[in-house]
Image 1: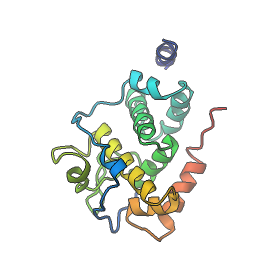
Image 2: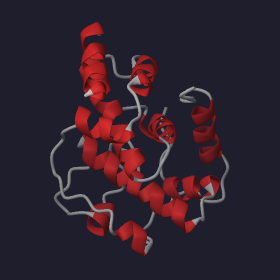
Image 3: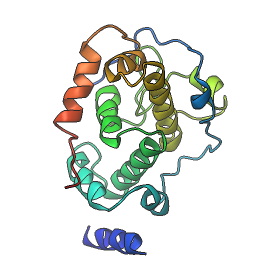
Length: 196
């Protein structure tokens, strides 16, 4: 762990809730431009993380919290780098994305809901035809997070920044309080983070 933390510092100095009524909705023009052409299961690199993060503190802090869900240090850090990168890329709070993942899949990469949603962020397969390619594997780390973050950004845009309604749309439970409230609770307790 010390060696990994040292490497990171050197780099910088140089539970399931399932979808109910998810269906296709026309994407806004700004969201349509966010597509994903990569098919690999590769995590975001340290360089990609460093390009969007101010320090390594977030990674270290979240790694400790995530350890009970993802015990392997390398897998955990790859996961967190990718969450941070993809969330930031979509203009989302990485802690919100972690909260959604905890509620949706319990951090299980190969989770499948009764409705057929897949992966960490429980993405419905129809989205591959809408914002990507039919051959994208929704169980791949980066693919799943890119799709999930893009979809949530779309719903936030559609709902003019209303997180309650956007989360309801994301889960297919628009108008019901249970899902958004559960995500908010995780966001404000388990994953709350302040850089100061």
